Image (cartoon, rainbow, N blue to C red; front, side, top):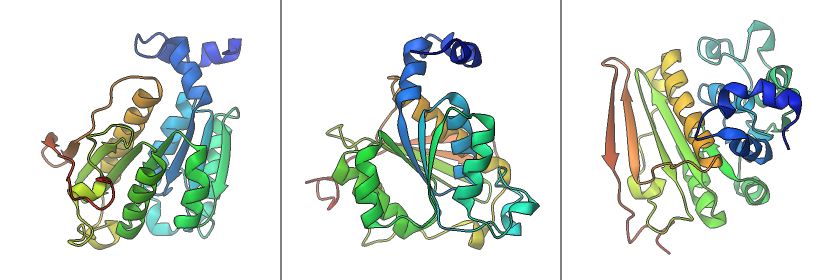
Length: 248
């Protein structure tokens, strides 16, 4: 049940036909794992925390650098050289003390994934490391956990939704087979504009809220944002029958 304070706090959400008090209760009960608390993880965690997600796991072993501050908006100059997940948890808790936030101040590996994925309802990939992205994709397929992947460089960004519980859902390796290797581009090599991360992170958070409240979220679709031209493109994906990760 929602408390009187929660009903007031989330009143602008619960008045939405696609949310209501039932949807808000679903958000309160939800358990979400966010991997990577950098440029995407900042807005994703902030929006999901503000929306009333009851349990959030933050995973990141990296420390805050001065070069992060133009885009990682939860952090400030006093936070430099401290762990991203730890500081993000502190800031998020100040906004919503009701959220249960657990910090994993290390990089995700197979062992951690095998332990934590069974505990959650949804995973959000906010990393900028290709090997970690392949690992998250593989483990989400193994544990049948829905996954929202986001990425951004320069003025451009993209996101996609993978649902292993849907028979025909394509996974990340269907799009970028590991033997061909996805482009290893990130903000360190190509640069990034902060608001692009806000757009993609906001879209990841939106898909998460829709999924957790029982609204439709499209699989088999790669959504690409062109920030210079303010345009979106959607590309249809197809599950690859020989994909070594999801075809079995």
